Length: 332
Image 1 (tube, rainbow, N blue to C red):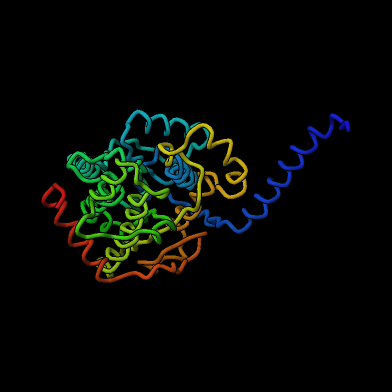
Image 2 (cartoon, one colour):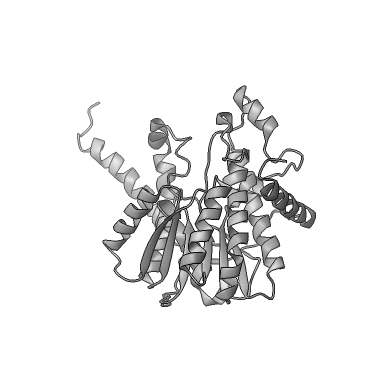
């Protein structure tokens, strides 16, 4: 039986159209920040602003005339990002600065420079994050497990050092970028640095998931909730949010070339662009409707009630241990 040569074009084309329509239908449910308020005179600080969601958040804020500090580990990449945004957006102000969240010394030097150059910070967006295979046993400069040290402790220390500038800008905001994966997290307070799981991973016993990343996202939520309680009455609102399942370079350590082929159909339907992922972050950072709703979790530009059973005792213990680790500058 012979087939028309057109069928070899028609079938792939039909599949592509079907996937495109499925993506369009699904994207209708994705949140979109509708606020276009002018942010002239306001200063926003974004960690990890040189790529992905951080870059798109910076672009959206500059479009609204804000002054944006691009706090990035690689200063040259931060400068390149500023130049890239400038090709499209001429308003606002872009200020590249060097910040390595894997080093307490770098955090302290960064804060010192910020306090020298800026009287107030209107919004701090804790966006930067890392994902690394546990088998690599990566650590911060002080010896903390990389997910604990960067995704949680780095932002914990940075935020606390900047609180006086945030108070001067009240009403101001802190946005903590977390993930729905926080609901998969579990905290072992006897082993927050995950030594046992890392040793298992080195022996090839690791699971498909990355518990280090999941746990750090749970720490993000606990941090936001605890901080909101401590700052109640100070004019600083704190929000945690999930940007959704986005196509960024965050998981580059896990993606092989063949994954792009195998996962292409799923990615086309389910994965958002970085710009789409930034919508909820921008919403939490700018929209007036969330003012006063401190301590809440947001997804799809709306308040979200996670199914996770938050434990107040765990929340308090994490804060206390985080303070101890920062003070000791070493793992407990």
